[in-house]
Image (cartoon, rainbow, N blue to C red):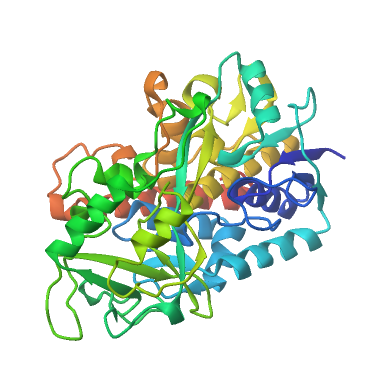
Length: 450
């Protein structure tokens, strides 16, 4: 019986393993964490561990591209979306999860699946034969990255991804801070008061910005100095260097929020989002940073409400490795020079938890289809899955390829003019129709590919 080798037990590898196993395919899942190896960002050896935010972002399938992707994945039996829903936390219209319970659940399900063998081992080279899915993510071990570079004839690309600090809630001064979602928006499991808000006046804000610019930063190694950042996970001090008002119009924007203590409007606001089911840990939204730990603690405690804050985790920085997918991979994510190898997840240059899992879902089903001799069609470009796939495999400019979250800019434009305020819902309405038209005949014919 054919056994598929998956390298990497993150979101993409876990999703691919689940999809294959559910279709009766035997899987060997290799994960180096648990074998004495660890990455700079992971904290545990659990599968599908969330290392940055605990948010899968918007769950709104009517007006959000990533929310639409959530729904398409749910319709295709995604373990990541299923378990994410079971372990969700209040976060307005976003889908935030308890990262520990979520990872534990995914690990348990995959460990107990009769078609999955989980091996704690580090893989240093690409296999020369056998169906293989490389889903090692943004923290691919250097030895394997070098092997990938040798196989592709190109150097791996890399950028830095920063991690936000996490605060113990009991150390936040709620006589200064207050609970409120922006514009009091109520989402699933929430009540319109899902975020902790710490207000700043003008003087406090500009003092904070200066502190960011002056604070001692993590020093780069020589080979890291020219590595670009991903715009969606930009360290706050890098944003601050672009201009003093940048953060006030970014993660510290005060709009839609009113101080419940005195009815005032702040000049800038720091928001914290619940990070675990118990509500004891809260992460600082958009506060990814490369400040050294001592500088972080000193500066963050100047934020009103956080003067006595204690941190469960300080912010951090890690390298993110990805390949030039438009140049190296075919439409089914096969390596053109070695088609027995497919890539999945963030190593392909998609960005975000959900996008990573979505690519793992598609790749897992393609491998299963190949084993069964099936050749179903690809998801339409008008769907979230199809738009993401098209971007990775050719929609992006290979010369300047950079990671990308799913967004409506990746979807084909409408032939007719659509009013701006109606555009998002028009995209999702078209996507749902095309997804249903495409998926129904596949299910009817018993074809398993998405």
